[in-house]
Length: 258
Image (cartoon, rainbow, N blue to C red; front, side, top):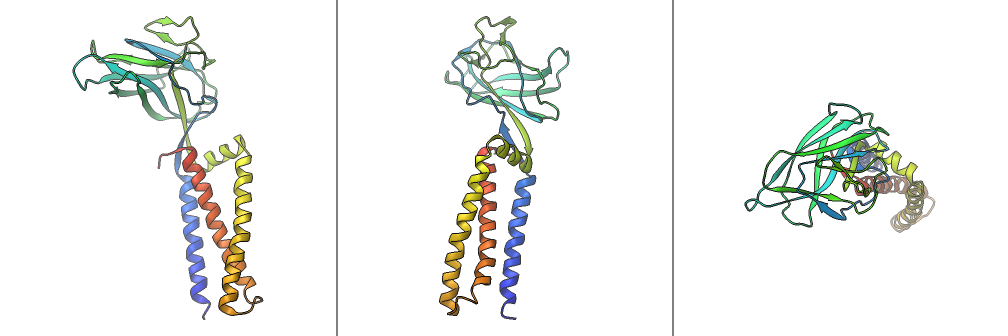
């Protein structure tokens, strides 16, 4: 009967960790598409009334595109409304459409987030991102352009004129997925991450076992009665630490959505 409270506590801790891990694995996360790096503008082009940029992403569930932009002219605090369309190459109608407002007045600009419902089969498909200003004539819209050819899918077209200098729109696509799928992608893209988690878990198990065993010997006075006690609690605590490490990896590598 004396061990019953400890067993109940162990079960409560284990159930809590399972619930937290389950929430993290089934929550939705947004992650930047591979191959795009930290793309930033080399300069801004404008005033822009319409701009088009072909692009591809190596992921399904394309859900967001960030674009560098700012507005200039007009009254203080003026904002520019932009309609963003994601159009399959060669199609007439967009597959996704979103309206965003640009309020950044500085010439340094800042990325605007174009969100839309995820495109489930977006992997490898050639799309065209089309941005059209809705407000006018003021404020003027300026969009970030890369200073080199960063996007192999094609050059940017500004106000109907295709760039001859292989310039691209400064953009960053994102895809969305459940925590388990994102974690699988992280491990496949860099298996070293899994090794680090396992290595940390093993070292954590040894350290926690030593601490719990030392404390148990101090309390009980005999090491033989402590081994099972220390092993159980060490495994439970290490499981919790490994779960926390995986959750932290998910949060640091992606933007939580739910």
